[in-house]
Image (cartoon, rainbow, N blue to C red; front, side, top):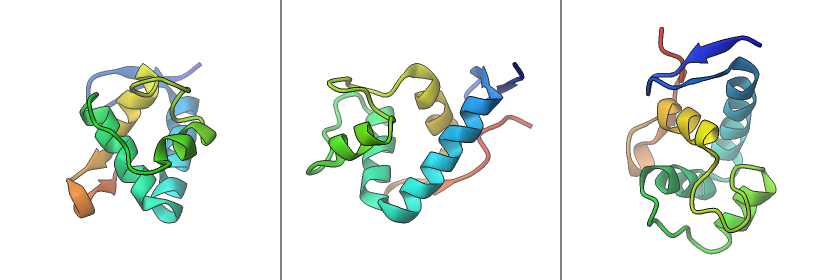
Length: 97
């Protein structure tokens, strides 16, 4: 299986990176508050998401029930793909070129 190096230095499977990026793009377009919460959970393990965002993220497979943070691979992809803060968050290619 082909692997790639992400901007944070982690090595991940290319099919996983592609899949997670598709999910993140959909999340950003259709549920920007849950997208924000997901990024903040990855950046700060003590962050508490708003309302039922945790359940919405669990439904998309981005968080396991009762997990404080996403799986390490998902977190690596998110931290490598998201730039900016607050309303200025955006997605970019997470792969180191």
